[in-house]
Each structure stands twice: as C-alpha cells, then as structure tokens.
Amino acid sequence: MTGGASGGASGAAGGAGTVVGDVVEDLVVHSATLVEAAGAQPGTWVAVRGGEVVARGVGGGWREHAGGSGTEVLDADGALLTAGMVDLHGHGGGGAAHEEGPGAVLAAAAAHREHGTTRSVVSFVSDAVDVLAERLAGVADLVEEHPHVLGSHLEGPFLALERKGAHSPGALVDPTPAAVAHLLDAARGTLRQVTLDPRRDGAVEAARAFAAAGVVVAVGHTEATHDEAAAAFDAGARLLTHAFNAMPGLHHRAPGPVAAACGDERVVLELVLDGEHVHPAAAAVLLRAAAGRVALVTDAMAAAAGGEDGRYRLGGLDVVVSGGRAVVEGTDTLAGSTLTLDRALRTGVAAGLPLPVLVDAATAVPAGVLGLRGRLGALEPGRVADLVLLDDDLVVRSVRPSRRRVVPPGAPAGRR
Image 1 (cartoon, rainbow, N blue to C red):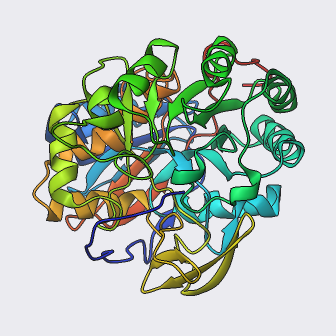
Image 2 (cartoon, rainbow, N blue to C red):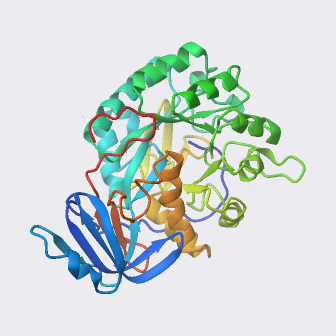
Image 3 (cartoon, rainbow, N blue to C red):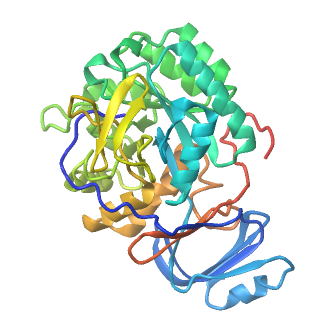
C-alpha cells in the first residue's frame, strides 16, 4: 500500500462481459494472436492436455490435437492470447478485503480472474504480529485447496514510519528473530514474500532468515539510500515493492533504491501502472532501465475489479474511493489502487509502451520472482495452461484457468 503519487487518469474499467470458463483439462485453442515477450504471432494454436500445454504452433497443425474424446476446440478468431497473469501484490477486489478472511480472499481472486489474473499472492497490510500470523495460517489452508492462491505477502509490519503510506503507524515494529520465526511457522511454507525497510533494527538478519526459508524479500516503504538498498540486495533481497512509491525518488545526486534495483540484475521491480502511482513517462524509463525485470502489480484494495466508489477499511485505516482513486480518509495518500492487470496493459499501451513488454511484465516476470518461470507465465509445452483471450482494445474476452497447483522451489509439496 503506497503513499504519494503522480497524476493521471485511472482508465476504463474493462472486463464487462468476460467469460470465465471451466478449468482447463483438454482443450485446443486456434487462430489466436499469441502475445509474449518475443512479440505477437498471428495464427497461433495451443493444445492442452490434463491442464498443461502439450504443443503449440502456427497454422493448421492444431487439427492433429483436436480429435480426442472430450477435447474442447476453441476458435479464437484472431483474438489476442496470453498466459494467465500473475499478481504478486494485491490486497482485495470485488468489494472484499483480504483482512476479512479466507472467504474474502477467494471473492477478491474471483473478481480479478475476470480481468485475466489467474494466479495471485495474497497481500496483507501491517498489523500486530499475532494477527498477521493468524492470517498467514488461513492462507496456508487455502493454498492446499485453491490452485490460484499462491501464498501470502506481508507488506509490513517492518516498515519505516516516515514512509508508512496506508499502514497504521502503531503497527510498525522491528523484525525481531522471535517475530520472524512466529510468522514463518504460521505460514507453513506458504509465505512467498515480505516487504522490509532495510533501516529497521534487525532488518539484515531478518532478510537473511526469510531468504533462507525461501521467502522473497522486498525492499520497500523506506528512506533507504542507494547504498543501503544495495546492501539489502546483497543480503538477499530480490524485489523492490511498488518502485518509486513510498521511497526516495530517483535524484541525480541521491539515486535511492530505484537506481540500486535497476543496477542489480538479481532484482525485480514492482510497478503499479495505473497512471496514478507512477507517471507513464517514469514507467517507460523503468521498463527500459530494468528490461525484463519489471513486474506489473495491482496493489489493489477492495474497490478494485468491480467494487464501487465509497468508504472502505484497509487494515486499521479508513479509505475513501472516488472516481476509482483510493486515498486514506482526510489525506491525499494513496491507499493502494483500484487497478486490474488488464487495465495496466491498457494504460501502458495508451502511453506508447510495447504490448509484448507489458504482457511479459504481467506474466513471465512475476512467475520468475516466485521461482515458477518453468511452470507459469508462458504458453509453452510443460507449462500450466492458464489462458487469457483479449480483444483488440485489450478488454478480456475469456479466461480459461487450469486446476494444476504449482509449488515454488523449497515449499512443501502437499497435493498438486
């Protein structure tokens, strides 16, 4: 959850009339324009068996895969085809906030699925460590049953008071060894990422402990300098939470965390591309400076993906949403966004950014952050078959998810 923003319109809502189909088992999609990092390829077909991609090509070869009993054949009729989008950072949607419990987590995920997000990490704002532990345990239960739930993200409570954004100041604490161990135990191997201010007492030790447990450590909500952020990356941090927001800007004499992340090939940078959090011109600079290392995220709160303007709660704070813009009541501090990932694509294209780069940032790059690039984020043989069809205006027409569960490296296998 961010604080501070650049101007810009929030863009069209999109998603109206989206068809979210049954989970994919055996399917052939043909006559699609596949969009991925390498570019756009018209006339593409993809064959799916048992929820995984088994073959793809261009032209009429799809017919060889269409004769099996129970195989569905879908004529894309030239529509744009992408892998399912992966959101590393979101707090709710469809009127539901993750803090409201497992039912709200599933409702928010369903709302975002209509906009092309087929897999997501469940983000929580800062709260008491015991409360956060209970929430992590609830998500751990969901991960076993719902393959679209990838695990949890703690955006706090180990954040800087000066850069708290939409986090309750009374909830911010240092990451003690006891707190770190308690949270890891509660998550049962499903804590995927944690945002830390590297200036917090014990932050370096905490970053190493989280990283050793397979958790992606992110630098964020911080006053850290370039060198302090770089030291955090050397200590194991591999992500920058919503780049530019809730941190020092990119100054020519004080380049800050953004420059440190751009200059480190090990680090991926989150980007909230809604026209509010980051000006499109700054987003373009980021996508060029860290090519292939920018992950589009929504940072969405409850009003996203079909929610309405009005009053909401975010953790312990009151939030007002007007015209799709969410702020902490009585301030101009952004309280997350009402963004969906399909709208992020539209915002980027409207600003002149290349669609293949944006699609990569919404699919393969976030999958890679979680160590899942070999399973998610692309429609290639051996990958999970989460498919999204969009029209020429980048409005989602159809979403076809797979029920295949994916497990990041080092996480408990459980059921797949």
